[in-house]
Amino acid sequence: MHPENNTNMSKVILITGASSGFGKATAELLASKGYTVYGTSRNPQSHPTVHFLQMDVRNPESVATGIDRIVAAEGRIDAVVNNAGMGIGGALEMATDDEISVQMGTNFRGCVNVCQKVLPVMRRQRQGRIVNISSIGGVMGLPYQGFYSASKFAIEGFSEALAAEVKGFGIQVSMVEPGDFATNFTASRKNSILTAESEAYGASFHRSIDIIENEENGGLRPEILAKKVVKIIECRRPRLRYVVANLEQRLSVVLHNILPGNMFVNILRSYYKV
View 1 (cartoon, rainbow, N blue to C red):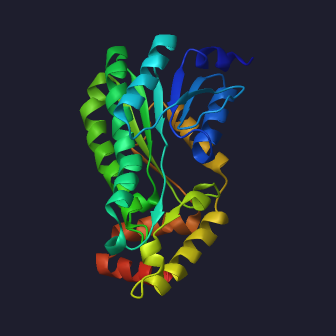
View 2 (tube, rainbow, N blue to C red):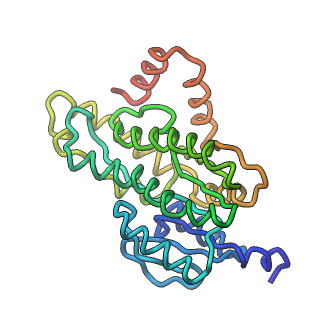
């Protein structure tokens, strides 16, 4: 074992949504570097290097049970990566109450539930690291992914406020804003049947979702994001925000911040053929 791993072994990392995609790649990379890694999934399976726990981040009791188990076994939690998430595609007008509840409950409230339970542990330790996985969809409102964007915008505001509130306790908060990555997120996206069959939105939706899925399937490898998350965890003074995307998408974030709002919306409309 390398000398650095002796130090890492004493550090305990929790990663939500670790059964696939970003979470799986990050959990395995951290474990390979000697960290004690706990991953969560609603349907956990055994893993040779990652300790898996059953957890539904939408359920505060499930979150509390999982985190209590980690603290009972390890005595501490040094870092949390809030990665659990999902997407629902469709027109905002057509979104059902259940779709909105699941989208916001998983992506935003799930992050909140985990943070609220782990923060007392980190405050007692007088140190900790929280990395919340946002999206470039949390910087700009993506057409036909409106409530996904809303959930990520919520994470952005929550994380910025949280960073200010907990810095005095030695707790550091960062956000990662990924662009398109080739993961199972695309295949698991739930698309609105009402939108797909809508006379008003259907044709536009199908054009747009085809572009979105094509870019995701041709996106970056999740290992690239995993390496960035590890660097954030190991960085002495991490930044609040990190964009991890291809050049075109990084440029789109810059343009969003400098162009007039209506001009940028027109660029989005043209790009996604809305």
